[in-house]
Image (tube, rainbow over all chains, first blue to last red; front, side, top):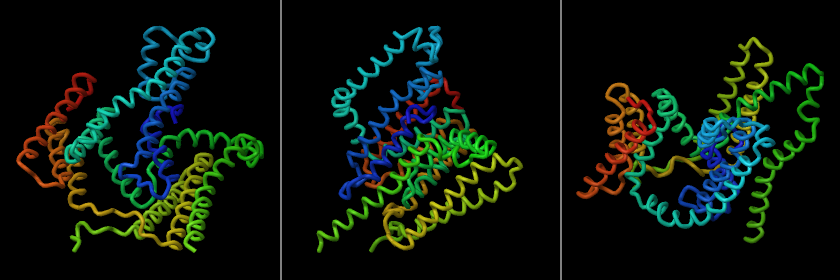
Amino acid sequence: MGILPGASGSVAGLVAYSEAKRTAKQDQKFGEGEPNGIMATESANSATVGGGFIPTLVLGIPGTPPDAIVLGARLVQGVRTGPAMFTQSGSIVFTFIYGLIIATVLMLPAGLLIGRYAYKSIVTVPKAVLVPTVGFMTIIGTFAIRNSVSDVIIMLCLGVFGWVVARFGFAASPIVLGLMLGPIAEQGFVQGWTIGAATNNLFGMFYGRPISQGILLFILITLILPPVVKWQKSRRYEEADQ
Amino acid sequence: MTPPSAMKSGGQIGSLLASLFFICAGLITLYDTTSYTDRDSQVFPQTIAIILVVTATVSFIARVLQPSDEGGFGTGIWWLRVLLIMTMFLMCLLIPKIGFLPAGVVAFSGGLIAAMHEGWRAETLILYPVSGAVVITAFYVLFKFVLYVPLP
């Protein structure tokens, strides 16, 4: 998720939470303080940092909002990003790589120490104060992007929609992913379609290459595996009951 | 007896309605693409709409074949939920008229009332609004004077 420009830690957190929920054991209660849910979102959030540096360093497109600040700082210092930076200014690139390794290693002690006190204090904040605070933060955060009240109204409408459909088994993360990846997918799909139609090889264009076959295989596994595992589990429970 | 406002909503009918909504959304998109003049620009939305209709139909059929009351709106109190959303919408309407800070106070007060399930005591009656005032002012100052966001 980190390498996709615009899809930052929040989107990765949503996707990770959905996956953790989907693959959870039956006794895990997501949405009621399940530790695995917190671990999934937080580890996904941290994982986007490294990935976000890929488009930032290679293409000069910030992957996450902090990368935009890093990119701006490099531009101010006169350091040009792109593939040439890897050959001409290897020391800068390796500074980032080593910095990320150190930061990743330090996450554990920092998380253990800060988590024990800071996160605990957040959890102890009364819900009556926490709910309007989060609501206010979402409004001010949305407004700050383009200084538009319309954006806030859209955010609220989509928030209500997402909450309602999530209550009935439709996860919000695929919808968010669709919004984020839609333009990229559309561009690639239309390009493939146009080339395939022009060369009279539409099927081969989409399904003929090893990489597309591999991706399709993974999609099929992702689609088929959960119901099969669920069916096997229920069968095991039935056998145990008998 | 469970009060009517706190009754647990059934997940079955809601899931079917949600599936129907996605089917209708897909069909409307399919219909809308017929007005596109360029054939190439029709391809992607049509593909996505067809996938949406197929998957939502599968979800609908699966839910019909295996009825389950899983999901639903839970046991929350409806008027409090509506109040929370309405005050946030109200804030949006008030921002251009009275400014961000007073509109924020309105939204925070509504949210505070909506999220207060424990009953008010003398100390919470003072402490919570004061906490709210601190939070709103802190964020307003941060965004307006540190991050230079032109808040009205």
